[in-house]
Length: 142
Image 1: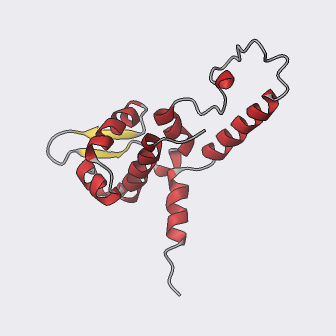
Image 2 (image 1 turned 90 degrees about the vertical axis):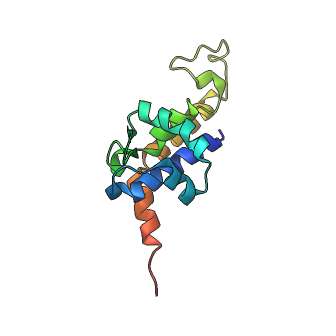
């Protein structure tokens, strides 16, 4: 499994929104400038996140984007599934029911099922708030 640029940029966009959560709606230009990401690329990502109920949009004067939920309710897993699709490490596990004709005789299937479970559990255990908390713990000066 390899996370694409779309998935990585979506996380950066959401972390930026979480960092500025009290500022109301944020323009994509501001996010693009702070994150050094093309505004055009972000314009391709936000509809996906809006459709999934992760981001809320507002048009017009003082328009922009903000998180549709609290940062502690947005999981990295949900963001990556929204932008990457299925996160399975092998094609036979892409669907809910494994239809591979070799599944009964596959001696390695348990490895991939276990890996998928570890990845899912790990990514579901990290929220945007966890990322913010970790970032803030590095902001101390001795």
